[in-house]
Length: 279
Ligand code: RP5
Ligand code: MG
Ligand code: MG
Image: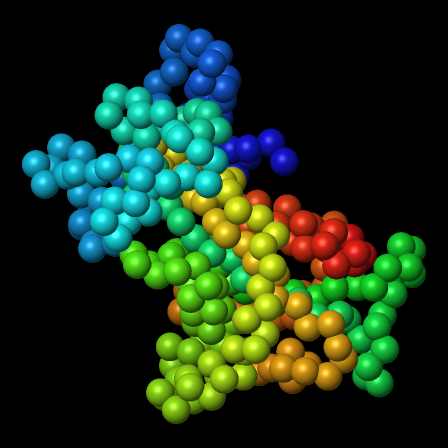
C-alpha cells in the first residue's frame, strides 16, 4: 500500500492542507514550498507521563536511535535521520510537523495480536470459500473508540514492557474487557489464554501507516499471530467483551474486502499467507 494514505485522511486539523502541500512525499525530492502544519494535540500539551516533554522545555532530552532509559527509541527500520534536532519520518513527508497525537518523537512502539481460528460449521467442519476453495479464516477484531473503524486489538508497549506482555495485555483489555474484571476473574482469563499466547508467530515488525503519523513521530508495531488450528480449543467458546479503548469486538471473517484501521489489512493479509487461508 502506498504510505501516508491514511494520515491525509482528516485525523489532524486542516488535512486538506496536507493533501495540497505534500506533493512529494519523498525527502529526496526537493519540495520548495513545503509548509507543513505544526500540530501537537491538547492531550499531549498536558504533558502526560507517557509523552516526551516539549522540545523547547529545558527538561527535554532524548537519545535518538537507542534504548533511552526505559523508552525504546530504536526503529525497526534502522537509523532514522535527525532533521532540525528532531527525528525525521523514514517514509517521507506527511504535511504535519510536531507530534500530533503521538507521545514520542521518533518511533512509537505498539504490538498487534492477530488471534485467529478457522470458520467452521456447527459440527466443526472447516468452511471453504466457494470461489477460492480455501478455508476461511476468522480473527478477533475490535471497533476503535476513536472513530478509526475496525482494527486489530493492538496497543502501545509501555516503558519497560516486553512485546509478548503487551500482546497479551492489549488483547485482554480490548477483546476481553479485563479492566472490568476482578483479580480472580483476570487470573482465570490469563490461564485461559496463556497456552495460546505462548505460540505467537511474527507476521510483521515495522512501520505502520497510521493516521496519527507526522514528519517527526510515527507508529511502529510487532504483529504476532496466535492461531487455533483445531476445532475444539480456547477460541471455540472464548467470551469476547469489548473494553478499554475498544467500543465493540467480534469474530471477523477474513477476506480482501476487509476495510481496517491503519495498515492492519496488510498485517492480516500476511497472516492469511502464513496459514494459506482464503483472502
Ligand atoms: C496502530 O495503532 C498499531 O498497529 C496498533 O494497532 C495501534 C496502537 O495504538 P492505540 O490502539 O493504542 O491507539 O498503529
Ligand atoms: Mg488499541
Ligand atoms: Mg489499548
